Length: 114
Length: 111
Image (cartoon, rainbow over the protein chains, first blue to last red):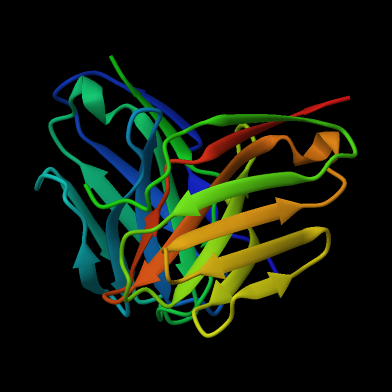
């Protein structure tokens, strides 16, 4: 079974631009979570989606948004990019996203904002 | 922000020795804990998990210990190998479809 895939793997943008990242979960997984990973803040939860509905959101500004499609694929968007948005963005999937389920991570998209 | 409390220390061990990585968590209501391993350029990879109704769980060369009284987790790696060099994260699943990660520990294995 294929793992979680994320595209693109690397991205360079300039301040003020916007970016869309894509995540395809493991087949059969309906819960998709997004995380931001930086050296200073570690892994920070962004949001979680299940059946096209956002069930939880972390403490990030409204510039960070996401969505999920009917095939469980998910995208996240960051508008008006800031230098501090440079990070590794990780997507993780699980079957139902329940509290006693393990998440499986993709390789991440490394975003550099100049 | 919320965190499973673990500043990013570095642990250096000799190949063949046992490694112990520690983690403190903050939410006493959390009932599921996971250890992940992250190698350079990759996403976190599941190692082992434990539910709160257990205090010890063993896998292949790894053991996780849970002490709910002091809200502490540890990961023990037996006979540490160079391939174990990575950053290790503990994580807790809280309610609300959210996982909280610790800051990670970098493990160096000296050959």
